[in-house]
Image (cartoon, rainbow, N blue to C red; front, top):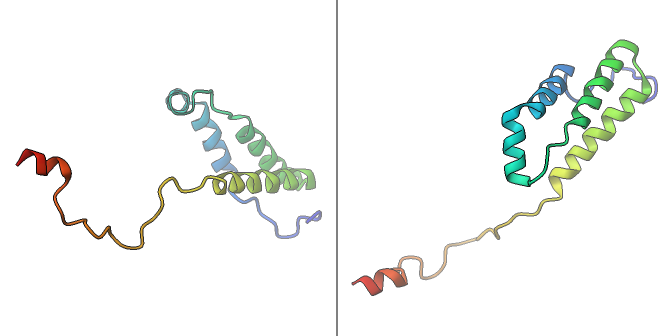
Length: 106
């Protein structure tokens, strides 16, 4: 891993730049603040963009390690959220019956 061989960043540098630009946009800020109640953390996208550019220019082992760790953390963050709903294997036995509210109306 240290020599870089045929290693490529997980994403093209343009993608890190686009993500950083999107993260800093007013629309994303408002959406993120509304949903999460806090400002979006865009610093990691900027660091990833800098690491990607450093890798492309100098083939830095530190930049390679930084990008790998960042992507690994990003994947782990997406896996930590469990499903909200329990998935059913089959419909309820009484799914075809009228709802209680419909029975009252009749």
